Image (cartoon, rainbow, N blue to C red; front, top):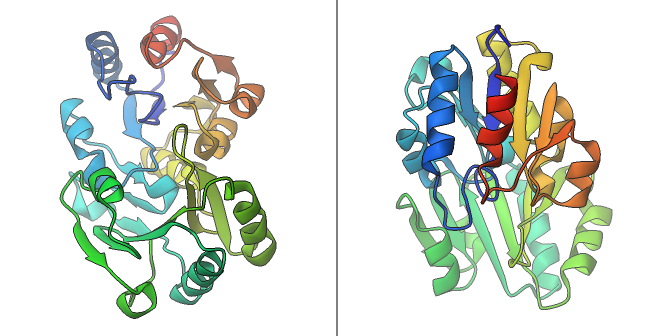
Length: 267
C-alpha cells in the first residue's frame, strides 16, 4: 500500500485493551503508519472530551468522529468545520416520554458537553465524567432546551429488547438505536441516518482518500455501517458475530494487538 490510507479506529474493545490502555506495539505501529503518510482517525461513540486523552497520546492532528457520527470536528484545526447532527428537540421529547412510560431506570441526555440525568446516579456520573462535562439532574422536559446530541437509556432489568422494539415501532424513521457492549444493558439513540460511516466519509473526502483506501476497525453494533463502508472493514476477534459476518477480515482481539497485527501485514 503506497497511497495514503485512512485508518479509522473505534476505541473501546478495539484500540483499547480491556484495561483501557493502548499498548506500546499498537502505538508504535500507528506512529509508523503516520510517518508513511497514512491518516489515523478516531471513530467512536464517546464524546471528544472522553477520547481526547487518547487523541493526544497518539499525537493525532486529524478530524475526530464522535457520538457515533453525530459530532465531527478537527480539534487541531477549527477551520476544518464542526458537523453536529443532533436529534430535534421535539423528537427527543417524545423518545423521553416513551422511555418514562416504560419506567426506564434512568435517562441521560447529552448536548455535546452538557449531561442531563433524570435521576442522580453515581454510576452514570462516574461513567460520563471523563473530560469534565457539566452535569444537570431533574425533570428532563424542563431542563432540556437544545437539540440533544444523544440519549442514553437504562431500561428496567430484562426490558431492553422490549423497549428497543417499542422505540423502533414508534420512532424508527427519525432515530438510530445502538446498544452498549457487555456488561451494560444500555440503549443509546442518535438522530436517524447518523452513524460512524457518515462521519468517516466526510473525513475521507476532506483528505481526498477514496472509499477503497479506508481501513476501519471495530467490534460492536455501532461499527456495522463503518465496517461495511470501508474498503478494508476489519472486525476484532472479540467482535460481535454480526460484525464478523460483514467484515472483509478478522484480526486478533483488542487484548492481542489486533490493530497492529493487521496493519503490519497490509501497510
